[in-house]
Image 1 (cartoon, one colour):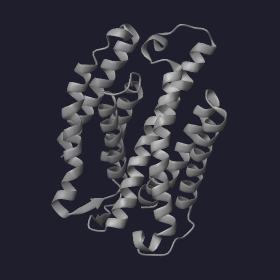
Image 2 (cartoon, rainbow, N blue to C red; image 1 turned 180 degrees about the vertical axis):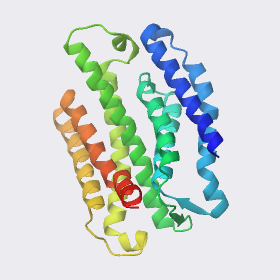
Image 3 (tube, rainbow, N blue to C red; image 1 turned 60 degrees about the vertical axis):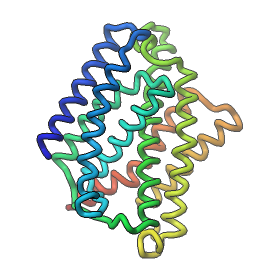
Image 4 (cartoon, helix red, strand yellow; image 1 turned 120 degrees about the vertical axis):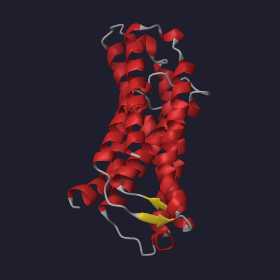
Length: 267
């Protein structure tokens, strides 16, 4: 297993170097997306197979810190791969592949506590499934928000950089960010409602107002406000991107952050 993890890190690093070199030196119009996806496809299949082994072997969902982090990043890679056939996502790779490499390294060094949940507990599986997919979607739109801030800075300074020719138009990035936010918000709503009002069915105990639930509700409120302002005021630009990033920070503090503190720092 460690050998396969190292192999994946090498592949993701190679993809990151390939994209960054092309972004710096190549022409954005002729980007060889098919070559990139042909390498990414077997890598994500191998990555997914490694993550699925505990489920197939022990019939449990392992949710330690390292596993959870790897699973979220894997879902991001799968979403990027599938989305590339329908949308212009060029530019996401600049951030996504380095994050994938770093996440695998962190997961290998800091696996966290082995916590297994029975996959036959359907209320819990619905809750955790909606949560993980929502986190992954919001992670993708956060990368879009960072690209928007990056591109806005260059445009505001009136300097023509390779980023301007490599990325899709700014309005396209913003439209895609809010489309993804709607999907993520629906899934996050399912997660918040199931974890709050149906806590006994999901977790086997009554709802408790913890830092985890507070950060989760706070992030839900941020994204809901963003979508409301977008619908009523056509809100866009730098401020919308900044609040998108802040919403994701709150969301990560609710789940991955709490796991890191409890399993890694406090043991």
